[in-house]
Length: 215
Image (cartoon, rainbow, N blue to C red; front, side, top):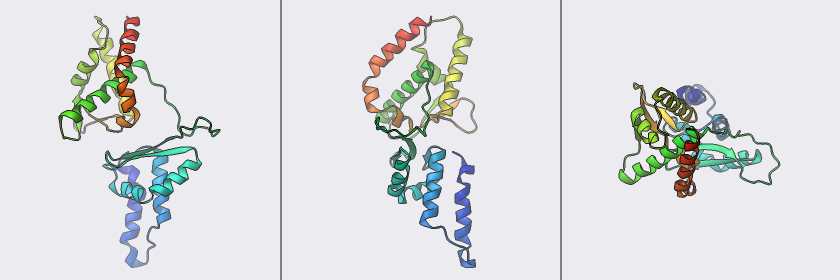
């Protein structure tokens, strides 16, 4: 999400600024519509749009009711500052899915797992909120699980492809003014949860086995 996505809010701000001139102030219904529209377009981040985040908090109960009709669940983490919609987990539901599943490649899945572990370690070791990693640090983290090969160019291209995909999914954000530094987005915690981490050793063993098979 970027500042352009906040355009409707800029319009509302203009309306409020012109209230003394007879303009119509935004209503609660306007705010709810704005919140729902942004949620249907993607993840809502507090840091990216504080006004929208405030409107979400003020209308969250109604928003949950609205999206539930569509077979969706509103996931809202007020501590980490993000919210998004996901399909209702009810397996008996006969509604078609509005949120598409995105199958991930093996290397993207591995990178997501390792980033989630690194974020957990970071949270245990420091009170800072932002985990920033260089491409070199990410490569070093992933290399432990890569098979030995003389084709370093291929490995480098594979890593770049995985980083790009993870960034497209919204779990990494390239820092402005840099070519190789990324912030790990905390929304990754919602997709790689504590239960998943509890099974990490078994999953990493599976990864190693799969990689051995690709030699």
